[in-house]
Image (cartoon, rainbow, N blue to C red):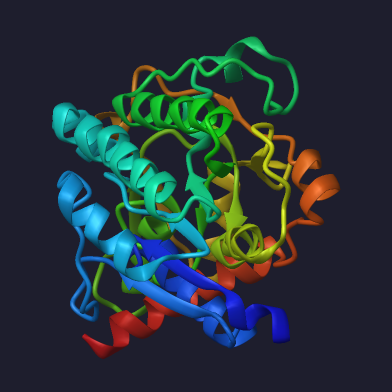
Length: 318
C-alpha cells in the first residue's frame, strides 16, 4: 500500500459508465491513490472540454498526474455517425490535446488510452479466429475510425516519449450501463415485462451476430493496473481486452429471458437490422494475460444476472 500513496491519477470521462466503475475500483482497492475525476455528469465538480487546448493544459499542469486514464469520448457509434466531425474533434484532436499536455507538464506520467475493438473493423471478416493486436486497423464506422486514428496517434507519440499504454477493449457491459447498448436494452425490456409495464414481446434486430463480451468490472481492473504498475516505456504496450469467447446475441437474450422465468415472445424487427453488421467479432487477449497478468474473472452468468437485477430494480422504483 505504501507505493500507491505516490499515485495521482487523472481520469477523463469519469462520470460515464466505465469511469464510474473505475472510480469505485480505485476507491475500494487503491485507497492510497489521489484521484482527480473529470467528467460532465451531475455528480462531477470538475469538467474539462477536451477541445479547448488551454483548459486541458491548465488541468494537467495543476494536477501533475502520475497517470492519466483517458476515457472521455463520443462513445456511442450512432452519435459518431450522426455527427462525425464532432466525433473526430473530441476523439482524435481532444486526445491529442491531452497527450501533448501530459508530455509537456507530466512527462513521466503513464498515459492510458482507451481505444476500441471497433478499430479492427473489416479485419474481423478477413481473419480466421480471434484477432490479435497485430491485426490491421480497418474501421468500418465513423466511431471505429476515430478510435483507430487516436490509437495510431498515441502509438506514434510513444516513440516521441509519451509513456503510453493502449487498450482495445471488446464489448463490455454491467449494471448501470445505458440501455442504448444491446445487453441493457434487452435487460430493460425483460424487466419491464416482469414488472407488468410492457406486453411479453421483445422486438429486436439481428440475433445471429456473435460478439466477445466482458464485464466492465474486469475491464477497469486492466485500466487501474496500467495506471499503477511500474511499466517500462515501450511503444509496444498495446493490448486487447477480450474474453476470447464469442457469444451469439440470441444466447444473451435467452439468458435474460431465463432470468424472468416467464414466457416472452421474440420478434425480429426488420427496421432494427443493420445491412453491414459484422457476423463475428472476437479477440485474443493473451498478450494482456502474459504481460499484465490480466484476465476476465467475473462469470458471464453473473454479469447477466447483475444487469437484469439493476434494471428490475429501476423498473420497480419508477
